[in-house]
Length: 174
Image (tube, rainbow, N blue to C red; front, side, top):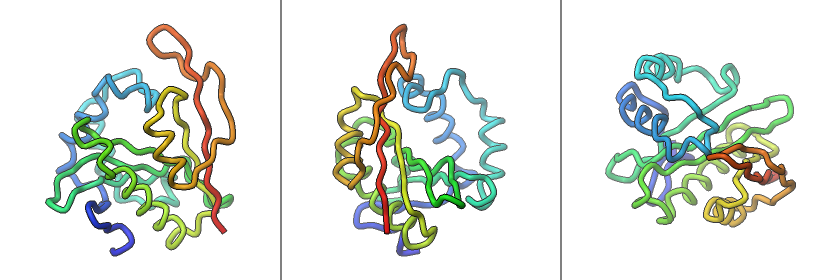
């Protein structure tokens, strides 16, 4: 599908072989803050999730895609969540797994491909994302792709003994 293929990366559906990759990501406590995770996931639960990953976005209200480089190496994931067909909107989340692969344009290209997919195949009207006030890299990424800050949720997330504010960003189409 050309919609999900870029110059340096492509997006693909989850495969059973992604078990270890997802297990590492979901159990990396350094990134639990961005996913609001507080407990580890077992391989058993992730395997069950992967067995259901073939279901349609209209049924499960979520689409998780793996970001791969041109050598087929999995770099991270990009998600649509809280998919709302009636109102034609969904949330977006991006994670590049290894810090050595961050800020190299992979997230930017993945977000561009996802936006293209959402407008050309899902007929979306809007996307939104939630980003911690202190995550300047992610804020820049989304703002450079046309997302606008539309609100600040004060003391939204409790992290390491203190509260953090979180921005709500949105992009509108057609």
